[in-house]
Image (cartoon, rainbow, N blue to C red; front, side, top):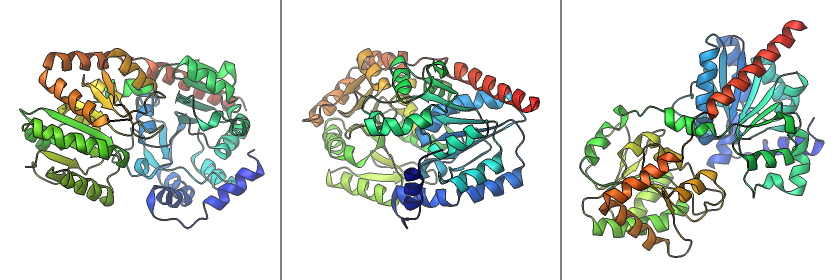
Length: 429
């Protein structure tokens, strides 16, 4: 079981009366999660096998989505549920193919016990590696197989520090199966206590997710009409740290190319973030409008998208993609979504820890901006790719070739075997 210090810290953190911000919304959502899952199980009466998938946030859920689809296909009468750590995923417009999605319960003995009693899962799956010690310990004690899919650990992860590694090892050795994205990830997971014979290198199921995902044109129809016949830059998952360089570059780019259309999709769609971005664009001399699925075709050259869950679909309109988060350490967001459409990618200077970003750079499908004077390079790159269609196409195809299929199949096969083994053991008893 987790040590006393962890349990005390968990209780203290979840009693902090935070309401504002992402952390406050996450804590608030998790406090009532055990009760909501208990009520859901009583109402829905989930049929076995029950597979509980946990994803920290939206990116982790996307990585799990193709695996979930394969499990649902194999267990047509079974149940797959999804838990989240972040409010973004808990409030996402869809449930990634699962029957229900809500916050993960507080990682404390009573709430975890209550949720496990209610859901009675046959398999517990963590996407990427957001393992919760109490949940893992209690599931292990109940004989529930525990798996980690699309598992990654960055070289500079805090988990690898001496003190963290000692703490994490007790959790890691309870994992029954782990599908690592790469050999380097496998080695780091083994250092974190995962048994060597439990680790298999599968590749990244997120690649399958973007390759297989179907574009939804209906909700973006008015934007497609607005963009038609124009060069389009889609700036996705833009954070506040991206804005100084991005807005300065857009100001210059719009002066150079009057026909350019710009779509900005902020990482968060809270009203305060939309207003800050809107004011920043005005200060940069760029007229902008905020678009949601309820509004008609925009009339400005720059549009801020205020609707959740449309970024992947919007990349279909792009000639060039800018992906946000790269102006802060360990912050770069998903770069393979635009690559799936054969769109060349630009991102900030903090990219070296991300395998997909490294692969895109090596292939020639992406450009990383320097930490110093990023604006001229961003303007020059966009200007060159807009002006030279052949060079833009070559870069986009190079980005597309980075994607590799098959990880979702390998992962799902292993999970189905784990579930079947668990059911055999239950029948034996």
